[in-house]
Structures are given as structure tokens and as C-alpha cells.
Length: 224
Image (tube, rainbow, N blue to C red; front, top):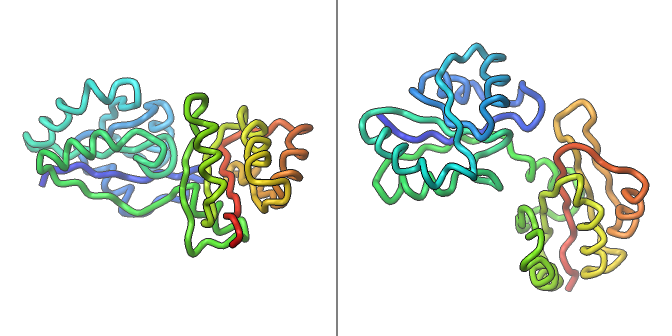
């Protein structure tokens, strides 16, 4: 049966993939990948020879109609991102929405995502939380940070290493020096690092140390 599969891929360690994900990637007619070079490393490791096509934020608006037509004509397609679950701060939403609107079957496999390991590892309350993804770079950034001052749930952010210090300092200004937080870096990889403390102490730490790799910031919510 033709359909769209959303397939999570490892966020670091190549062993963090399910048997079913490998099976699906090997059986579909086409794999859509955010970065074909990155995808081919994973596919080569698992001896998967399925054709791969580029699908990213810069071309998805032009390609979704053609992809939907391909699926309705009898093809099965799998969508993967560079790492983790497609659609979570990665391309995927637009294609899924169009498939849903056209009555095309969409199947999402469970699997890796950076936000859950970082949240649990933080030691902060995780029974209720909000995922903020990447904060706006410019327009709307201050407004969003100000809004989060009243958030009582634990907050999870994605950030690049180049903006980490700026974000920690801005969170400190809005939420207070003593607000508990953690920074997780390079999850599941050889140099994985999880630092816990206050927003102030974490900002001070990264003033003298430029981080590398993918980063997740977890911040405690406002206490009643």
C-alpha cells in the first residue's frame, strides 16, 4: 500500500535505530532526506540501497505536490531528517499536512529525538513540560522570552553552539539568575556532555568555553 512514512534516525550513535526503521527504509521506493550526504552515511552503514532525494526547507514548497502525486500513483516514500524525528524543528510538517489534506496515508515510526533524553537527564520536573524549539533569531525574540516568564512548566529549547551564550544570558535576564537549568550537548555521541546548574552559572561557564555540536537547553518553570 502506498503511503508516506516518517522515519526517525539516530541523533548520534548509529545503533540508536529500530529494526522496523531499517526495514522500512529498505522497502520503500524513495527516501526523502534533509541532507543526502548525511543520509547516505546511515544507509551505507545498514546496507540500504533505496534511492535518495533531497527534501529540505528551501525546496519543500516546490516539491510537495509532485511527491503527493507520486504517492497516490502507487509509490511508498520515507522521510528522514539529518537526525531525530522529522517535523520536530526539521522539514516534514508541510508534506504531512498536504498528505493529510489529500487523504494520503501517513505512518510515523517511534524513535530518537533529542528533547526527551535531555529533559529526563536534566533532573528537572518532566511530568509536564513545553517544547519551544529554536527561539526566533530576531523578530519576536524578546516578546517570546518575556512571555515565558510566566511559564510554570519545564521548558525545552534547541540551540546552536554559536548562540548558546546569548540565549543563556537572555534567559537569565528574563527568568532570573537562580533559575535551575541544564545544557545537554552531543547526546549519544562520544563526547556527550550534560551540565546542570543555574542560568547564571551556566552562562558563566560558556563565557570561557565555546561549545560544539547540537545543544538542548532545559529550564525550570516558574515556581508558584
